[in-house]
Every structure is written in structure tokens, then in C-alpha cells.
Image (tube, rainbow, N blue to C red):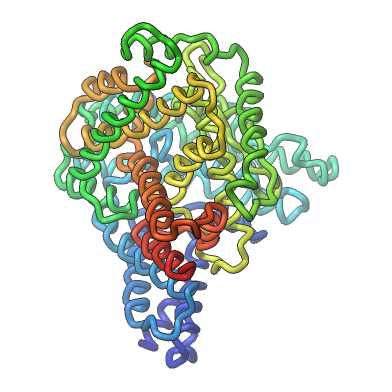
Length: 574
């Protein structure tokens, strides 16, 4: 045991200490591992960033060894004597360790070059957030730029290994991948890693000239040539090996990998068959509810005709990106007036909206939330402002609640502000917990008395319908052998998405991030089940504000673990 603790970086002197000390020391080791893996996490804690992610096979093997050792260590720590917080930490580390070990055989399946999955977009966000206040900061920035070409080479080597193993992306996805990488290949002063002059105000004119000169040289001589070689490989040998059909089922062990992804992203013990069946039930239930809304509007046509009218209704379209931002901001302000009826605790961090970077818009259906950073202490939802004549905003109200308040911004910043949580749990993001809470937050708009207009309710239902569709589409393409066209036709029949949105969404499920889209609806349904179970058990003693505060106070947990915590919450109230 002492040897194992030493391998984990835990001092040998605590080997015979209490269970509490052991679990907390192990949690600190996990936190340091998180910091080693994420430059953005280091920035969040005011730590210097001195290396980029290790995407190599050797790095993946070390990661697997780390989690194997954590799993062995946590299994020897008894529950007896642990506080509630330490017991939760033990459960989380046990889950993380099991998934980390379980992932080890699937290195060659994972993507590092697609729009949603490429770590390079995260690296670009990292470069954009790095401090440049002094000479040491600027030197560190240039040192990281020196590492960037090696990162690109690692990606190319993995592509070569995937070609050798016949694990190549299908041709339809390459239509998105190639433009994405070409968008990174720009003249130095237009490069995603170039530094805008507004970030160099602390430098003297001479220091600024020297910094920009070296940065320009590195981009010209090191970064761009590696990008060119990578793009040449993707367009050449890689594209030549690309199949036409989508889906993990086509690969040896592909279905096994997908079963792992279902467990990983939902954080529940579920099978693809169970997820698919849930999706079909959700679609049937939501379709009936939408028909009731159709009747409430007075629409005289069929449900199919009603959905078609929603697709083209002018009230759901705007003409400028600024109007998109104003509409989203307006919905957030509307929810702000209702939060005190749902929560006792509020996040202190400000938030807002902004348009996505141009190179990301062709490949992303909606956008993403980005948490506050030291250089930008404001959470931002970055929305897609392109092709607005093809972007229906019927779901914009629910999307705002999902992404900002009381969704991602509210949840993530409360975690970061919660000093009672161990550091490794403050920084943790579990897909079903995060995205499930986002979808649950959209539902809370109804609890708060919003969605009063029937067309507003129709938009909310169509957002729920899209997330229910994901359960069938994701499993259908990755596990059950659905073609891309079958999935797209299914989406046309059941959602409001335009052809532009359907094209990117189906590739996201079937190719880019298989399994990830399951987390939204499966996580949300779990949050709803837990709440109704508590409400039923407590009756008149159920307080929605107290319940929500508890669920958020325990931080990110696998949903199977959170289920047990809700039962303990109920017992404590009793």
C-alpha cells in the first residue's frame, strides 16, 4: 500500500493515517492530474501554463496507469468514518478510475480532428486567454507556440495509425474537417494564435515589436508548414481510405466502444437498446403534447402542417447577429426575475452572449458556453450568427435557459464558488450531469411561469423533441446501422431543424462525438425522476428551493451516485 501511495505522489507517511486523510490526499492527487491535463484549468486557478495537451499513445497509456492506480487505492479506503463530502469524493474517484481504465483499449477510436472533438479549438481558446502582462508571460506564450507544431504532428501520426487500423472518418465528415483545418492556416497576423495589440498594452514599444516579430516567425516557419502537411495528408492518403457509411458499428469492436460511450456519457448503467427505446417513447409523448399546443393556437391544419408552419414563421427569424444576441439576452433577463422562486443560492459571476469565431460557424449547429476566465471574468454563450435565414429561433428561449441561467453558467460557476467542494470536484465536468442540468433548466422555465404564449411552448417542446431525437439518432447510426440519410429523414420528420442544421447535427451524432448527445435527455430525465421521487416522499415538506440548492451543492456527480444522494437528502428532511 505504501508503494502504491508513493507511485500516486502521496507521501508515504500518510499510509497508515485515517480514511479521511487518505481520501483527501488521493483527491488532491486527482486534482493535480486534472491540472496536468488542462491548461484552461490551470488558468482558472491562476497557475502558469507551460505545456499543451499530450495527445500521444504514450500519454494515453500513462493516463490509464494513473487511473488504474487510483482505482486500486480508493478500493482500499473504507467508508466508515468518512464525512458525507469525503464519501462522495470516494464514489466520484471510483467512477472516474473505472471509466479511465475502461477507455484504455479505445485510443485509436477517439477523434482529434473533427469540429466538436478537436482539442485544437480548445488550444486556441487557451492561447486567447493566456495573460500577457509581463515579460515572463510573453516568454511563456512563445514557448507554448514552439510546442504547437509538435501537437499538430501528433495529430497527423494518430491519423496515420487510424488509417493502418481502418478506423477512418467517413467521407461526409471530411467535408467539414478539411475546411476547419484550412481555417487555421492563415497568414501570421490572421492566425488563431496571433495576439491582438490590445493584449500587449503592458509591453513597451520595443518589447511589443520583438514579441510580434518572434511570433510571426514561429507561425510562418513552424506552425503553418505543419498545418499544411496535416491538411495534405487528410486530403490525400486519409481521404482515399475514407468509407462512405457512418457509424461505429462498421469497425471491429465498434459496438463495444459505443456501449462504453453510453455508460461514460450518461454516467448510468445503461445499454444502447435502453437508450434507443427511451428516445422512441420521448418522441411519441412529446408529439402528443405538441398536438395539444397546436390546438391551443387555433391552428386548423394537421400536426405535420403545424410543424411546417413553425419552421417558416417569421417570428422565429432575425436578420442580424446582433438581434440574435439581443433575443438571447432578453430571455436571460426574463429568467433572472424568477430565479429566487427556484433557488436559495445564486452565482456571483456575470454572463453574456457573443458570436462564435468565424472558423467554427460552418461546423457547429448552435454554439457553446465558455466559463469565466481570469482575463475575462464573465461566462459567455457563443452563438452561431451565420446563415440567419436558415436558423430558426423557436428554441432560443429554452436554449438560453440551458446555456446561461439557470443552466450551464449558473451550475458551473456555483461549483467554482463552492469552497466546500474538494478542488478536483470543483473542476470536474460530467456530461450527463452538466448537459442534463442544462435541459432540466429549460424545463424550469415552465415551473417559473414562463413559456406562457403557446408558440413559446411549441418552441420549448421542439427543443425537447430534438433532444429526444438524439437518443434514437445517435444509437441508430452508431450501433444499429442507420444510414446518414435515414437519420436525416428521421430528423426532418420530428424536428424544426433546417437542412443546414440537420447536416451538421447528424454528423455530430454519427461521427464527431458518438454517445455525447445522449447525455442531454438521459441526464434531464434523471434529474426529473429524482425531483419527483423527493416530492412524492416529502409531500408538504418538499421545498423546491431547498432541493435545488442541495442538488447543486454536491457538485458534479455520476447520475447513479446522485440518485443515492437524493435519497439521503429525503431521509435528512424526514
